[in-house]
Image 1 (cartoon, one colour):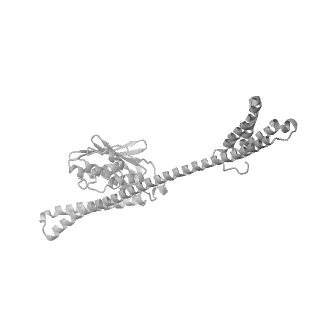
Image 2 (cartoon, helix red, strand yellow):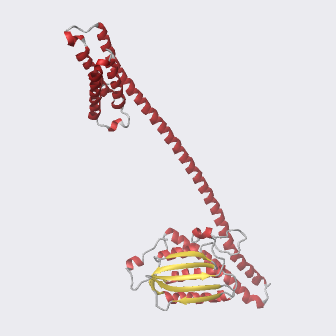
Image 3 (cartoon, helix red, strand yellow):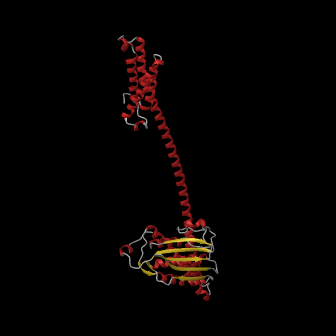
Length: 395
């Protein structure tokens, strides 16, 4: 491009320079053809106007340099065809010289002015775009700040609720233990009540030990420090043994517990103690939420290459809104201070993490007459790679 060109507009910078000069020559050629065709009908200044118009078009679409080329073509046309110098050898008259000078000035001036206008327009559009981006970025930052503040407030609220829940759940069995121990120590308890007192103390001590064990287990799974002592397990025997061990607690409340187990041995590779914990937690959860006189069914069957353990009950069911949080730690459908069921809300969270450590899955659904929990574990027919089986597994 010629000297004095302004920066290229974004669209023009993508067009090769040679193409823009071809555009200038094409516009000059069209103007020249029109000049020959319309020459008999035009005044003396008409060719000037035609090439001035061609120059403006070229300057707008191609830039300053191509516009000067177009203007130079018009000037040469005027000198060759319309001046007295070419027709009779007479020098240019002063009027013609003035017109040619004005035409040359118009060509350069219009090219520079139009290019400057395009540059100013481009700068204005860039400024507007930058301002819009800045406004949008500020809006996004403000939205992120609002969301972060809401998250922090929710986290702080959950922390307070968690501390209150933990302190309440740990204090409840401890108060019972201390109360009965005080009665026995002061001699205020009749001898015939001593056995009952010891039973209550033992029950609450076990409850507190279980709470602490659950807290430690969930901490291990969250930090990836849970270790599985794996071996080949016949799941049929494990499910039946855990269900039979839970039967007295169910029958004590008039709950009928039935067992339906596939007769074909179903072998899995896993940690026996943790598998017992999973099944026991599901049955305990069913007993907890099933009213007196209800029914619980524990089933084991083969589904393709998986063993499927199902624990269903006729209890309170599951609120649909709570299903997404069913296996989250410290989440309970009723977290109010007047809730009827205790606990930290860790049982199902541990169930999911332990099942996933064994390569399985667990889901919970509400039914028309209660709830159903299904655990699926991969079946094994031979010992897997010991290197993969014995390493520490992350929760």
